[in-house]
Amino acid sequence: MAHYMLANGREGTEAVKKAREFSLKATELERLLIEAQYASVVENDREKRLRILQEAAEKYPKDKEVHTYLAMAYSSRGAHEQSIDEYNKVLALDPNNPDALNMIAYEHMGIKDFDKAVEYLKDTWPFCPDNPTRSIPWPKRISGWASWMRP
Image (cartoon, rainbow, N blue to C red):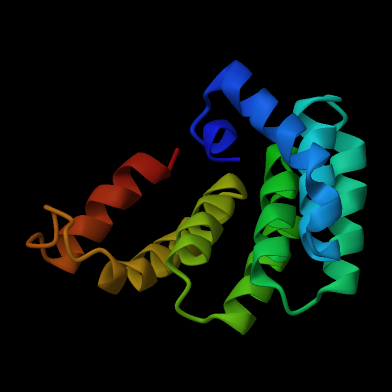
């Protein structure tokens, strides 16, 4: 899966195929996630991927990885509101999840709710200790974000 996540084209596709071959040894949740990835990468069937991820979310409502993948699936379809709902489920399970905080900000940008986007981006700040721009004060940073986020 790492090859696919790193956008290593052919290697990624082969890794997903190999994961599916060995999925009988995986848990049910892992099998569902592998099948969803296979549907997307190998079969190029986004609808099937979405159905599998929805099934996984129903069966495993407390799994933040499932909700993250489902949020990403909705986002790729431009379904920002549904994606936000799924990221909120992740945050209900893990309120300080930096990836969910960051991605929900981008979803809010997608629906032009820039104030909410900035609010979530501020929440990600404590999780970025190595960020070289940490020395820029928040008011200046927010006005900078607002200038490129707003039409």
